Length: 120
Image (cartoon, rainbow, N blue to C red; front, side, top):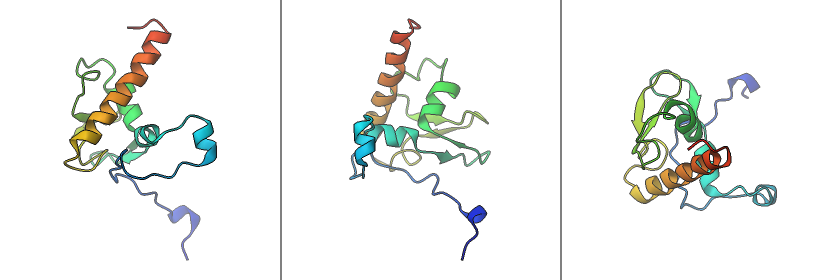
């Protein structure tokens, strides 16, 4: 029997947005899709041990980087500023299509936000 404080979530498991993924009816109704679930998934930084998501990486650590909105192949920890390839960290290793899908998705989300608040 494990104590509730001993529970460790499954971090740093790459997820493919093209793989079958269960979405609850409530998630579908709220407009949540597979790309959003992958971008919001929490990963554990191998360097500092803190958790972050692809969204946090792009919104905080990559905010002023010119490569952030141009399909950058990396993800950066917002806590220690370490950089890791998206392939093998966010999406399964060697899956360039998944990498492109996630880059395009996060770029679209942040560009839409910037357009909404006239920040581009």
